[in-house]
Length: 160
Image 1 (spheres, rainbow, N blue to C red):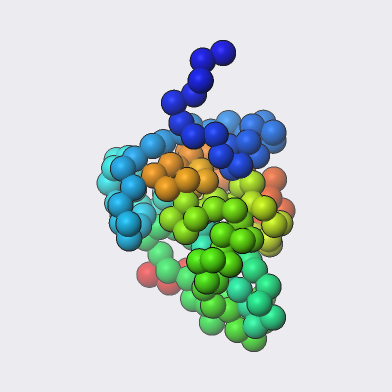
Image 2: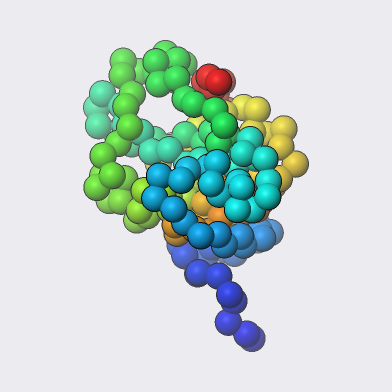
């Protein structure tokens, strides 16, 4: 079997173990380029690029939120929807500790620690999404149905 021309990350291993079809998509990573850069490199709409955001609540417990690349999360609305007092971005060192991934290369698939995953509900309507494959400059194209293997919860906390 020929060696694949993409990285074999914990996220890729997770997708393979769960028999989830994916298409690897490599692009030139740019620090702080965000989803607009990756969407432009791949020639897809930024709305189809889904970012993986690791947050923490007032008890310093981690959670993952998946959001369209062209939208922002209202942490206030998210906290209210989840019955929590406060939610804020996790420190990059803590993100790495929980997930095993670097910020900019964080995937919801194959994390070191099982964190609850909340999905902006409009993501389910996408035919295909492009989400981080566990390394900077590496996205995987998958059906949103792949998220169902993560025991996800739908939320509506997007703001333009």
